[in-house]
Image 1 (cartoon, one colour):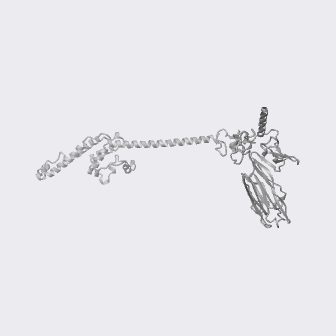
Image 2 (cartoon, rainbow, N blue to C red):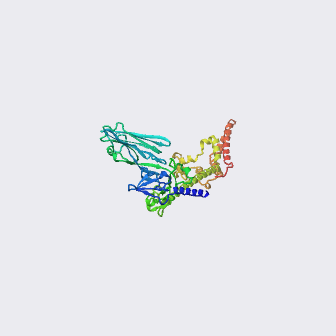
Image 3 (cartoon, helix red, strand yellow):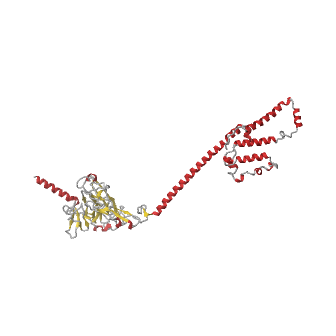
Length: 526
């Protein structure tokens, strides 16, 4: 008994393995149709009975049928890549003559793990026709249909199924079965000579093009191509991938876009083949097929599951038409040089601007320093505090000096030309030496270099000397003054004139105080 259990377990394991991997002796074609796993025509060659293909050779030429030998669904094509099977489905018909109905058939279809593809259309042909179908979809009974009518003189258009002579509707997704119904409103009365029958069928999109002659001669058409979708089992991909017997083999994975019952396998990008067979998803050589976007065909290099594009020597980039392509290294160098140069110019401009700002700031600080050293603050205070000084003197700003001298125009320099720029009415034939001395002193004070300018103490001393010289030259203090006149003036003074004498003394005192004031200690800065 123990050995029997072991034998049964081994037998079950062998059978399971046979279902997952088809034997090498399995038929690979029947007629013009290739048979690939999970489909098969022999025992152990198919995944499950739902994928059985019967190759019928009784009529001479092999004809593949979907299902057991008792089936009548002819397979015209199958694809493991698209998970589709193309079958030749019967055309439904309802025919009449002047006596009444002479023929009628209404096809039906029952499927398990195979569904009617939404890529089909349901079409009806006739001038006195209404057709519809009903089928199971997810446990519900759904259906749809259309009506086609026309008269003897109706305007019919080839290629149009708009309801005049021909109508069509889309097929809902997920339909597993259908029953077709085909009827006539008036038994084709008065139109049997050009349209004796009504027709209805499922057909793959693009495989039927209506013609006005179909109303009379479509009786010879027995089948139309129809697409079926298939999947593996009833489990979703997320559940099935962790179980034994998962069919997606090397270089393949589950089709995430499929949302129906069961799961489908797809070869990875860059591979092709049958994803349900081990090691059958093989690399695609895009370079040989021309399925690449390299700028140059001879620069395409095939890789496992992909390809790469290269560039000639002296060029760089990805080499693709929709990418950067191949760019000359010289162009890259030029771009680098331009970028570096732009950065250098910007840096130079910034440094220059910063230098000028710092220089200007230093100059302002230097001017303030010179202004303080040369008694500028004291001068401003004296001018602002003395009413008479405000009327006779003024401190000018740099901006005012620039404006007055036309931005220091050399033609405005008065050095050595003092008397040339004076008003002609003020020119003197005999210029006093004191004026010349004062003008020269003023010219020295206006020199730009601090070393060439006199100190305030030196200015005060020179002005004192000039002032003393002017006082000594005055007629009242000259040594040759007429003593008689002085005595006469003194004799005329009386006590009543004491106030005037005080006035003169006051004036003299004021004059003396000005001289003393000029002698006050003054900072010697320039």
